[in-house]
Image 1 (cartoon, rainbow, N blue to C red):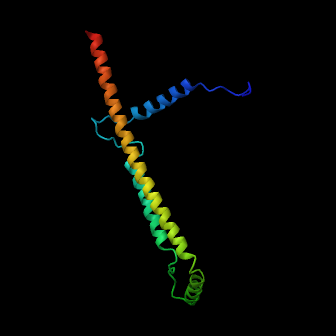
Image 2 (cartoon, one colour):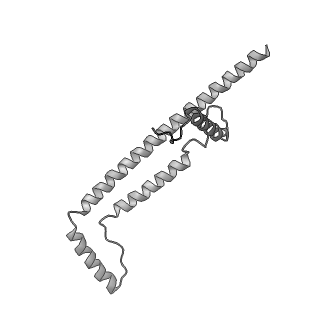
Length: 145
């Protein structure tokens, strides 16, 4: 290490992190053991992810499908050309569809795991806050005697 490299005060960094976490959860409404709506990744965030996955599924289902065509000469000629290209890519389209399906399954599993971890983490934080509250009440009660 050269003498010009800045030194990192680990205690100071840890204190800053603690303060950020306290500030974030100080804003969350206190409910008696219930999971507040502002969980780390709240249900709305997971609903957005699920909607995006559903959209991706619809897009993946359209791979290799004939697009809609207008009832014109250009539409009929275009349909013939599309069928020709689809036939030329007979070996490639199933590979793309399989990859899309596998990718979507992985993403769904990741979202489910993230949701589970988020919920468990939030429940642990609620429990720790409850225990900290009980400890502070016991400490305050002991000082009054």
